[in-house]
Length: 188
Image 1 (cartoon, rainbow, N blue to C red):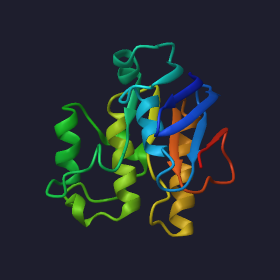
Image 2 (image 1 turned 45 degrees about the vertical axis):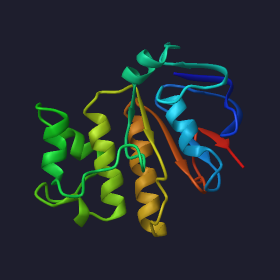
Image 3 (image 1 turned 90 degrees about the vertical axis):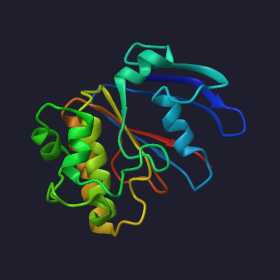
């Protein structure tokens, strides 16, 4: 599903080589400033690499990769509008039913709640639900462990594993990788 060979963006992240199959969870781990977000954006076809090769769902062109990969919550890129409700975010993205996406992402917030009222976990889950509306093959989620207590962090990792088990290839970034991952990419 994802094949990266010597993939790099000069001055942002070093050469990375890995493969992730369909239905797997790949974690990009490293400290702040290590290039995690940029690597995720590159894997999703939103940032142009300066070196190496990338294939996502058999596609090598950024435009085709963007159709195969959906961004969940990526801080600074897919920020939620704090003045909109959960329902407004969902309807803005798709006119079709979204109940299943909410359920699969584990969103438990009231659809009438403003996103500014959601805690970090529910914002991550809403980002996942929004990504699912695009019916992607690959889901990319950034900083999934940011500011979450241990029990909620474990719950989010389980939600990502569940999405992988349902057939999505999931790539998520974190400062520290969870215990169970299919592929680990460490940046320093």
